[in-house]
Length: 59
Image 1 (spheres, one colour):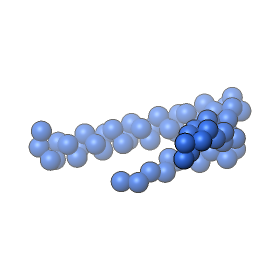
Image 2: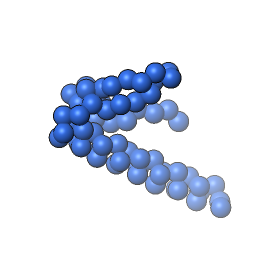
Image 3: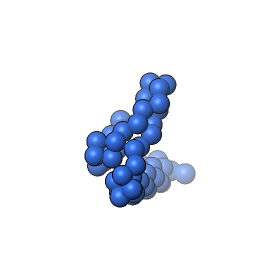
């Protein structure tokens, strides 16, 4: 694979993950269900109204 092909594939993966996150947030808010995550090794529940509309990540 060339560097350009890898970059294009990475972009498609990132977009897919972002779309999945948006669908997850919508699902959780529709069902008024908390989002359960692991943060610093601890289980954390985020209430639907507090779930950020977009995922935060670092490159």
